[in-house]
Image (cartoon, rainbow, N blue to C red):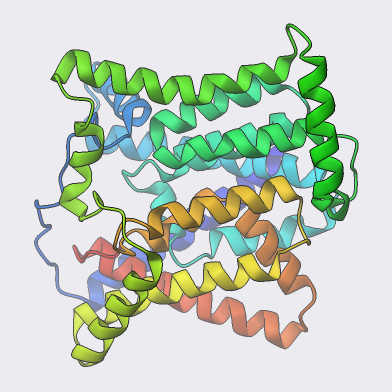
Amino acid sequence: MLKKSLLLFFSWKALVLFFAYLATLLLPFKEFPNSFIADPVFGRSLPYFVLIRSLNIFGVHPVIAGQIISNIFFLGALFVSLKLLSIDKKRSSFLLFGAVLILFPTSFFYGAVYNDSLFFFLATTSLYFARKRSFLLASVAGALATLSRLNGLVLVFPILFEFLSAKDKNPLDTWNLTKLKEEIGREIRKLIPGEKVYFVILIPLAFLGYLLFTQINYESWTKVFSAMSVWNQDKVIFPLQVFWRYIKIIGSFEFSNYVYQVALIELLFVVLYIGVLIYSYKKIRFSYWLFFAVSILIPSLTGTFQGMPRYGLHLYPFFLSLVLFLEQRSIPSKLIYFAISVFLLYYCLSLFTRGYFIA
């Protein structure tokens, strides 16, 4: 498993570096904007920030430290993902899963100074331990994920549903909601003291502790949310309104305009997520599907699709569903998918490394 993870990691790294080099030959450098810089404490990236500061103590530049941390956790995420795939009885899909993951159009963010690889590792680790019925470890990983990104809170649901459906080996059996309802009733009546699933409370407690930390040190717990205003993500807006806004943006600019291209990319990724979510209905475990669905819904309520091209990077169920879809397609169809994916990877990476905002 480790050899496969290392092979995937170094293949991905070589491709990213090659594309980044090509970008220097084709695109002029654009000055990086400073208008999107937010305090990492308020930006809900506390563990990532602490890790960077820890390396910085030893004289490592913060940017270099961030890249080291991101790459290490992406390698870890690859390893855990393959382990989880084995539990899901998809050993034959290792190669396809790895290809889908490392060739995803925004996979280069796993190695950038972003917390995407850290969250992907923690969220996937939480799912892995939940499937292994190690609910304490699943909850600890979920709590750390919540301190990294708000949608880590969603991990409460897959952990609970895995506890209730542990006897169901077939993913389709986990969708028997009547059976789940009866199981919930039995567990509530039993209320066994010391049952390990109760550790799931660590996840919301981590978030509440984060708010308390902010209140004590910065005199306002609301700064955790108001800090997101630099990305215009501090409001709750109905998703259909956001769709309409993007349609108007696309209709107002020409294709050659950078604003048009970024808006189109963000919208296309949202459509991709919705399409894969619909396809995966009753094809993956209910706990996976619920985590996937809510994780995509939360950012769509912020009034913008900024960041959407990155949000799929956090979701093992998304990549698993994409693999299930591609397994049913012909070889020419697979080649078309990967050709498009590699082209978009090169396009997005070229813009990003030359200083253009992508996500």
